[in-house]
Every structure is written in structure tokens, then in C-alpha cells.
Amino acid sequence: MDKKMKKIFGMLMFCFLALVLAPQSSVRAAYLGILGFEENLEDGFEETAVYSPVDVRGYYEMNVKGMYASSCKNIKAVSSDKKVATVRYSADEKCFLFTPKKPGKVDLTFSATKKGKKITCSGTVRVVRFKRPVRALKVDGKDYAKKIKTANAVVHIKTEKNKIPFEYRLQDGWELEYAYGQTRRTKSTWGKIEPIKDKKTFTVKKGDLLIEMVLRNERRGEKVRIYLSVEH
Image (tube, rainbow, N blue to C red):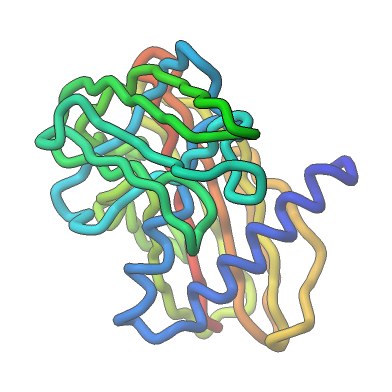
């Protein structure tokens, strides 16, 4: 794994750790905001978001090229159909928050004042209904595929075994973007990052195992993230 990927994965695992250590009541609110579109949306963008009925507060983070609180004023965002999706600028998150409401298509318009001049950006987002990307998702022989119900799924698992086998099978049309596992011996002590292809057996003598998968459906334009927190 190159240095850039290690840095990205390390940051994701840091966020994941905060997630899995948080009380269950706050985990839902925390992980729903992880998904995001391209880092800097430009005029004419076309994106796809995933809607799931169980994601009451599910949202995507959006960044628009050139529109940052440090250099802009009067930052605004407008959705052409609020029944399909809403969008707003969050001063706390320092980005736009896009919330899918139901399948459909919306036009988004962003505007701001920069150095006394008005700047704008517009594009479209297609909202599709969530479809489970995995046929099987087995940890220690038990299948957790049916627990994957959102585009950012978190599954908590317990096992007493030191050898933990993991394997998965994807639905047609889906491909693995990446998958990694990492052990956590203490809150601040981590094992090495281990890439996963189709199956792998992890050795966990002490501590927990954290697995992250990112799956993509090129035809539908969807991306789904799966987090597995295996408590040992």
C-alpha cells in the first residue's frame, strides 16, 4: 500500500474508531455523514446518491470548488425538488449537506459572494434506492449480509475466537474498490493494515478487529461503505 493510501485509510480508521467506541445512540448520527461526493464539485457536475428508508438523517457531504467559508460570504444552496432531496450549507461542517428523501433527480444551484463578485455552480444529482451489494458477508462463519441496509452500514459483532475468518460474495454488477482490516489492541495501539481480496483469516490475540469495505456499482453510479466492528 502506498503512503497516500495508508494516510487515507488511517484517517478513516480514526473516524471509525470514534464511531465504534461511541454510545449506540450516537453511532447512527455519526456515521451517516461519512459519504461524500467528489472533493470539489464543478459547474455541470452529475452525481449519484443512495436513498434508504432507514436513513432518517442520512446525508452526503459536498464541497464546491472555490466556495469556502474562509474566502466567501452569503453562501447558499438551492434544490429544485425538496421532496427528492434537500441541500444546505453547514457552517459547522464547513461544507454543503445533501439529504436524499426519495428516488428521483434534482438540480442543485450553489451561489456565494467572493471578493465582491457573485459566483455560482450548478449540476444534477440522481437519487437511487439502496440495493444490498453483498450476497454474503461472513465473519467467523456467520452471515451478516442482511444487516447491510444503508450506503454507510456499521455492523457490531462479538466473537471469542483468536482466528477470525472473513469472506464475502458480491451481487451482480458490484465490484470491490478496496477492503482492509486492522486490529486494535488498545484505544491507541493498532496492528498492521491488511488488504482483503475475497477472503482472509485474521489473528486477534487481544483487542478488536475493524474491517472497512468500499463497493461500487459503475452502471448505477452507486458507492456503499461497510464497517465491521468485531469485538474480541
